Image 1 (cartoon, helix red, strand yellow):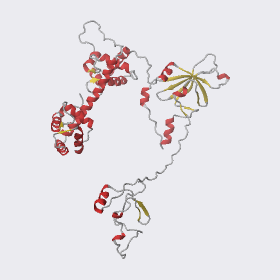
Image 2 (image 1 turned 180 degrees about the vertical axis):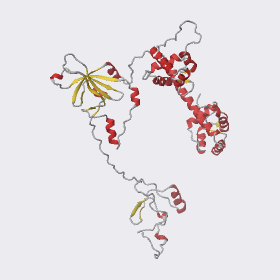
Image 3 (image 1 turned 90 degrees about the horizontal axis):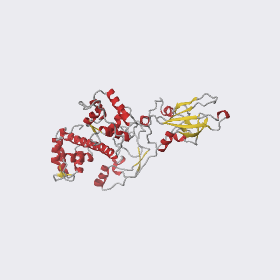
Image 4 (image 1 turned 120 degrees about the vertical axis):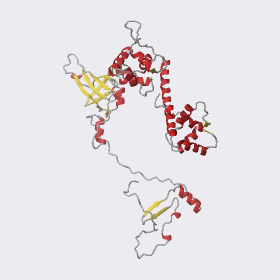
Length: 448
């Protein structure tokens, strides 16, 4: 249980019954009946050994149960459920947040002896970059001289920071400007950090002993509250395309290097997922899916939902022998087609399944071709499983498992269907299958 500092309670030896004592040279030898006999044990027995140690027998292993049944002619009782009481470890109460600094910094000094810098949520920073919610507020129960003062609350979604700004007003008589610096602040009325829901018009908030009444919000904030996943940043698709071309030419002078940057899995084509990630790397993050599909459609001349290297070069490079003078590239078609979006998504799924099939064939080929005599061991295991010349997917999985090769049944099915397309999965000729696996081993590269 981890409570004792030694692993052995009693070394292998004869254990006397009753009181334990150390015998000297002149002592009489003990009789056999004075020692503990394991054949007298049974499930549910309470026994005292070594003078004052009480034990409770609640279970026995399979060998012991079989020995009692075959050699002694008795069957041991079933296992008795025994549960040791868990020790209740008292946990120190978390001290209340003082409001100074961030919550993560304060909790770091509570949970660590040496405080560590809090980790940033990069996914949140990336998804909500530039999203600022702005609210209009005034003092709650103000003094006469503060009745006309107006404040703008700015809540930053990327890091949950809050800042308060007082816009200038004519004949106010007060120096306006920054009222509260950007930081993570606590709402003193709730005792928790500020959330966007706390700043809804009509609510009362309190920060650093100042109470504010929320009055209004801007149009962007209202739309974002209605649909948090919506994008309201205006994009001009033709301008995005020109900026993308200029950025790619500045970073990579060769079109080949640009295509390799887009083609992350190096399968020779660019899918819609790879195109979106490449746009993010070139500075076009959080673009709507419709814009990404439209840009992909501009590069995809054949319209099959993916961009090949030749199609990419045709859109990136100028023609070698143009017919007219100062010929320009055609603009991006602003229309959005649901059919093309479905084809692009289908190509992504198709590429993923193709990669899974290639990986399964490569794993099965490594098992057969890279290990000496492994094929003969697998065939021998098949002969132990069945007398027929055909097997099913489950039997192939069992034979591989018995020979020390772990492989999922789905991957086995992918490899079998690819190597022998017309085969019946319930009657697979295993000798022919593994011959084809060894023959086609070098045909499956890591990509393409």
